[in-house]
Amino acid sequence: MKNLLLILTASATLALYACSDDNEGSNDPKYPPVETQDPNTDYQPAFQGQTRAAGVRTSTRLDTTVITSSLTGPWSVKSLPDGRFLVTEKRGVLRIVTQTGTVGAAISGLPAVNSNGQGGLLGLTLDPAFATNRMVYWTFSENVAGGTVTAVAKGRLANDEKAIENAVVIYRAIPAYNGTLHYGSRIVFDAQGNLFVSTGERSDLATRPLAQSTTAALGKIVHITKDGQPAPGNPTFGEAGLPELYTIGHRNPQGLAIHPVTGDLWQAEHGPRGGDEINHIQAGKNYGWPTITYGIEYSGQKVGDGIQQKEGLEQPVYYWDPVVSPSGMTFYGGDRVPEWKNNLFIGALSGQHIVRLVIENNKVVGEERLLGGEGQRFRDVTQGVDGALYAVTDQGRLYRLDKAE
View (cartoon, rainbow, N blue to C red):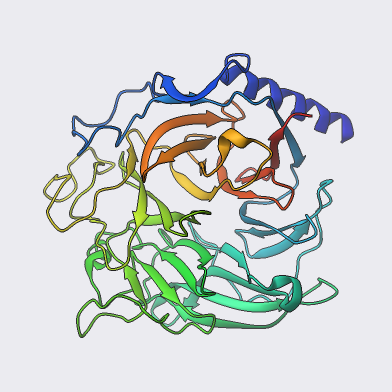
């Protein structure tokens, strides 16, 4: 196993250096765009740099390590205060993984999940005061009357780390639907100690219009307290609008992250065939799905009226066509790689790489692809307490990406 790990580490490092032209790079956006494939459409962006931004290349020598390949469908990873990792596995298992790759036993006490299709044990976050209260919050697909919902739960990690104590569901995104697709669903804390949760519109033509409905919690970002109540100061979407709604008009948002300087919320969501998006989230805004999109149906037909811009609907800060399938993401706030400061890192599923976006004045000015060629679907990216980046893949790997010593 040790020899295998060394082989994997070496191959990953070589792949990383290869995509950086032997590490002769620059943080200035002066290279050609990293996307070279033909787009699915002839749709035109709303502004320059909205897609296919100039390329950037990390100049710092990097090292990458496969910490373990023994996870089963990991979906979310968070760094514990002592440097270990708490990981959700889609099938409904929560585990702790050490820095040396020891994978702990399944932690008991979680509510049952429906892991069919795209469902399962999904997003994960730690209470800001986890070091003292040991509280964990997560999202999952739950069986309820009428089908399944994206649900939010919380519980305390026991001192012996064998169980989650007093687990309780604090929120359910209504209405329930008898389907297995597009649950979302990430979860992050804001600076006030409230939660942002992303929900999908459940994919089917029957539910897709609910992304625009303010009486449904599908295709939304909701803003709730630790007890699942609407957070104070939420925008108003009319008398009948659900009070927990923060933004509407989303498709399948699998990425949420808070900017380390501004405190703003950013989001990534899957488009259909083309039209994957990065959004700068602002309270009360409508992000357009399914009225506007830069993607098309998988059949090749236009989505709805086939329009990309409409007054009153927000434009994505950035989009991809063809898709990269953006999933979990994080802003880099460490000092290990100074040129990465405040850059956004996103796991790409179909793209099979980690996206690095350089953002200035809320616009994307550069894009880089890291760890391409590994054949891995990157599901989540997080920053460890040591300042390195860590990522999990659908195939069961946990990676460390850090400055080479």
